[in-house]
Amino acid sequence: MARRYKIKKEDEKTRLDRYLSTVMPKLTRSHLQTLIKDGHISVNDMVVKTGYMLKEDDIISVIIPVEQPLDLEPVDLDLDLLYQDDDIIIVNKPQGLVVHPAETVKSPTLVHGLLSQADHLSAINGVIRPGIVHRIDKDTSGLLVVAKHDEAHRILSDMLSRHEVKRDYLALVYGHFSEQKGIITAPIGRHHGNRLKMAVVQDGRHAVTHFEVLEAYGPYTLLNVTLETGRTHQIRVHMAHIGHPVVGDPLYGPKKVIGEQGQFLHAYRLSFIHPIKKEHMAFEADMPIQFKTFLEQFR
Image (tube, rainbow, N blue to C red):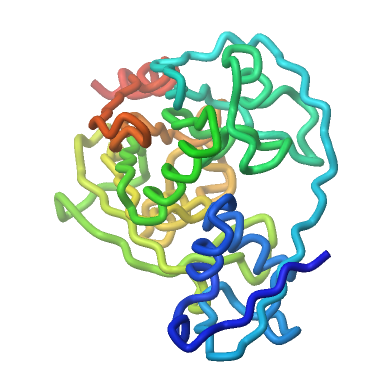
């Protein structure tokens, strides 16, 4: 059964996703945006974009799809939990581990491991993504914040959308830089010729990446990269776009891949205000041993 909302004059010129987040507070903004993109939310019986600006007397129809249950059994993966309280978990995800299950993922994921080491996880993102507020790629290692209940999840999601969660990465890239710092502002969307890839495209979503040179290692450079936005494959796409792809990246780098563990990209620092305690939290995780070993060759 569809939920319907008629727009009043005072709600004119409000973005569709923003309006829905106020009338449906139990759903995160990112979840609502996904529902809009998938055609489960319409305006005047027409499918529109998430940024559609509402007009008086518009009729919004919302159909929440029934997610197929997936039996997830806890799996002891001995995850590296840096912190855990009643509200959140900070986990250092190893390289090679997928964050959550999907139809194409058969092996245990981070979620399976979290179910083994946490007493409860938020349910706001459905049965296959409990607790997952944000993700990193399978072959990227590093820090993630996980929500243990829905209130913490909603607050953290809002903080992410307002860029109030600072995420820093170590990225080893090809080539050297003439400048010490830089900002890459280029929209990212699905690659027009390869649906498995993302790319800088004119009709893509706004994306901003900050980088700072840390040290040169032979033909490579180690960067500190800070995400202002969080698009799929953002660092990998942006660095390839400026001619400095991430070393070991099989999708956006040279065909001859260096290393056996995937891209040399590690989410090493995470800082934010605790969603419930309102205290400043900051965490760091050292780079994986294979990352260190590779750099040692050039010292």
